[in-house]
Length: 190
Image (tube, rainbow, N blue to C red; front, side, top):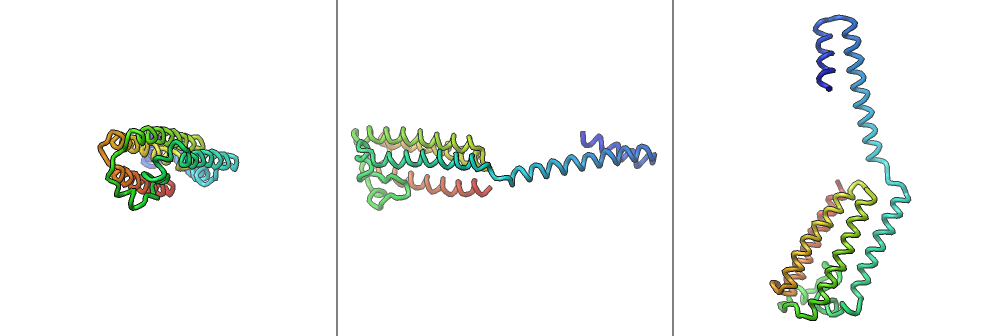
């Protein structure tokens, strides 16, 4: 469509007719105005902060999920995991936890699978919250969370099926968290 309008301008200049030149110039001017309005509108949209109510809702919903995650770490039925075998937060793994050569026991497996299910559900909620509020980086953050869920399920499967030790699980979990944190910083910056 744009190329047709520019051809009219070129033909008008070549033919040299005053009426054709005026029409061509008007069309070219109209195209420039439309492009300028579109650019300014897009720039205003990206510079406009989200309404305060949305920001408050985002913070409230995110805080609620994070609080749920904190409560999981002190649940009595999961203390078999968090008392010695793994940290609540991946980045808090101790040297002993990272070097633990033992495999998961059947009682630990029950608690681990419960924790893994709760963790996956809370991360799905966080992905949904980021999409719901549609902030600039919401989709990118939600995608990172979902990618992390896929990686986490594979790691959990390897661990709960006895293919890796507690130490290897804790190392991979910590490494995955560090990669996620770095990717998250990049996604928010863009």
